[in-house]
Image (cartoon, rainbow, N blue to C red):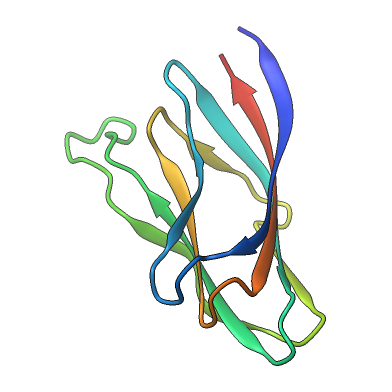
Length: 119
């Protein structure tokens, strides 16, 4: 198994406020470990941001299928500020799992995602 560290960045997201935009989707035959996620406000006033984990895989020994969950919901980010989520924690993404970003104002949050892909 190969472990590959990567950064995924997006200058501004989402294209439309209230419509979460895909930031990252785990490729086939891959498990991804999210190491860090930073959201920066690039607007002239405060915004709120949300991060969703969209999963349709089954978790652990459960027979139920995973569902969409929030890693962050409507968190305020001040002007010129940033928010680091998952600080010191990790999230595992399985094949086809994805992270989506939403913001209260279109194209006003800049994203940096640090991951390790295991193939």
